[in-house]
Length: 127
Image (cartoon, rainbow, N blue to C red; front, side, top):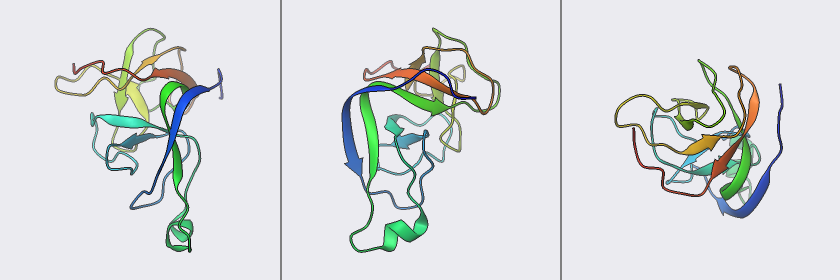
C-alpha cells in the first residue's frame, strides 16, 4: 500500500552497475544496495532495467539524497519516528542490528511491502 508522498530537495543521477527497482536504497556506488545495513546515498525515484543499462546512452537512475522520499518496506515493517536501514534487497527495515547504518527516519508506520515516506539527508550514524 502506498502512503505519504515525496518532497525531494536534492536528486542526483547515478549510473548503476545492475538493474534498479524504484523506491529502494541506493548505495554510495550508485547501485541498489545488496548487503543489509549498508550506508545509503539515497532512494531511487525510478526503476532502471538491464536493457536500459546497455542502451546508448544508458539510462541513469535519479536518486533522492536530501528531502523526503518513498521507500518500500522490508520484512518486519516499520514504525514512524524510528531509524531505518536497508535490507539485502534495498528495502527499508528498522535499524536495530549493531553496526548497521541508520539511513533514514521513518515518517510513517508500515508493513512489509508498503511504500512509506522517509526523511533523508543527514548522517544518522550507526546502531
